[in-house]
Length: 115
Length: 111
Image (cartoon, rainbow over all chains, first blue to last red; front, side):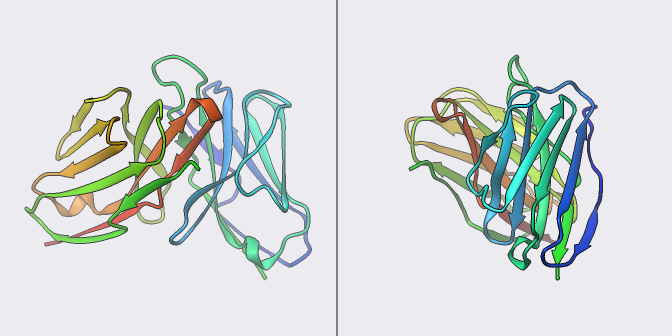
């Protein structure tokens, strides 16, 4: 089974803090994604990566950055957390090709509260 | 503009009834996915639909794709409480290297 592990289920941070959300997958997937999920808005893509050291902006990248130094790990960074970044953050990974191409496997999510 | 619209957003239904969730998308796509999210948990893949007329079924859930109408449906047959969850469709646009999720349909099934 594919496993996507997010480092924290719940986080509480203060405004202005630098926040790191870590995601690790164990199935050698090329693609990795960070989403935020808010009630009524579905999933919105923040950043994605198709390969090590590659990153692409999604629909709402402002206030976020990412790092992918190793294939299995994709980190989301909030440089200076703000209250409007309080949300559920979901990491996902997928294969680039083959029959299972682009079927995303999701982590359990990190619920971040910024006070 | 690439858009994916699901309806209804909320659905409360009785056990034993049939119902359909709709997923409309704005332009030609390559693949369509359905996911399920249980309360407090993450998303799990249900179906991948690859071509016009594709139909996939698992248990009481059946998904279909009409690429000409840009419409996918998720049909629930004789609903049971265990199917209560939020269901998302997601549309892949290879030309834009994007997968866009709908807002989700929260399904609540009453005994």
